[in-house]
Image (cartoon, rainbow, N blue to C red; front, side, top):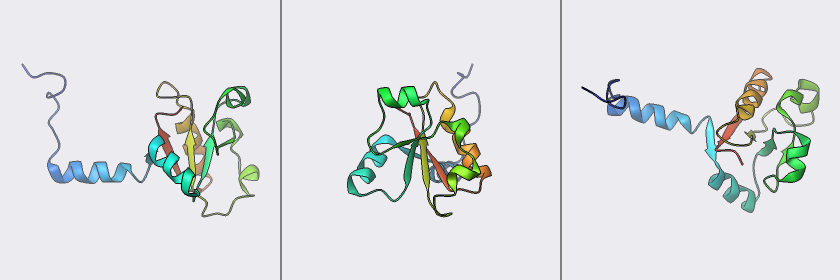
Amino acid sequence: MPSLVTQPPVADSASALEHFETMFRFETDCWDVHAALSQGADFVLIDVRSPEDFAHAHVPGSINIPHAKIIAARMTSYAAETLFVVYCAGPHCNGAQRAAIRLARLGRPVKIMIGGM
């Protein structure tokens, strides 16, 4: 009997390649963000947690905009082509996804920093 891992058929290599390459259009990780910030980032890093959580600890170089506060009026101070990278508390939190949806609905380029804080 196949396991839960092998029960769904595995994708062919071409499909797997397309899928995993496409993920980089939507996601980045903390190491790449750290390296980019140390070289002068070409994106805006947004911590989408509460101001209290941000005050307690955050990624240096990030700004705090709670995901519910990402609205068109607030984002007009950034050029239309500005890439936003959003993060939340960690894999147990969907705030980064909520922020990414809000930014995408505003027509803004966005990626999620996977893993969060």
